[in-house]
Image (tube, rainbow, N blue to C red; front, side):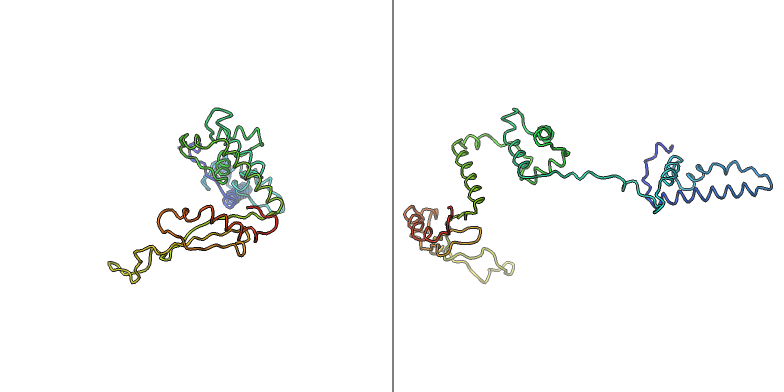
Length: 282
């Protein structure tokens, strides 16, 4: 097998220095023998220093030539070889993802089928994003960006959910998000409300116990009384004095039936509204 057919080896800085040292040693050896050749011996086999260096170090003559050329170009201050792989500057693969670019990418994916009558793929998205935001990353970078934004390559959903989502609902959602963004920019507290329930017999479902034996603690068969809990809070915590806890009249069915319009309105007027911070939005 010829040297050209062999798999190319990467010679690190230490190996390149050794090749250069072997070459200079053989060169000095040949010069010494040539100057002191009183017997007029044939030194022709020793004259091809490059070939002898290649045979001694196990590299090709072309590699020896390249290393000697690099040695001449080394700075006089350090004089050290550099590994070939360290010379390469890897592309960072990063792209400036500011809010504007994120919104453009999200809008492009959302409207791609409507605008282009095609299914968006990485290659197609990259082509469009190059024109819109000057995206210069590779497909792997774009894939990482989409995953970071919460996207996933998955099966196409049926149109059942799309048909159920009316345009008026989309408009209400858009108005809501716009208002929330506006209130947050103005520094107004955003208040969230919710209700839940708790049973007097609420216990953990698991505990430590011996195998093939009942646990020392037994759950009650009945559910016990149901208590409805209503509260509100902001990012800073619950609203003071706004908690409402009362015993439900029924423990069967959905607990939302225990929180009717009258109870909610009374809690809203008597407990929540009087204790809201200034300029709060519910």
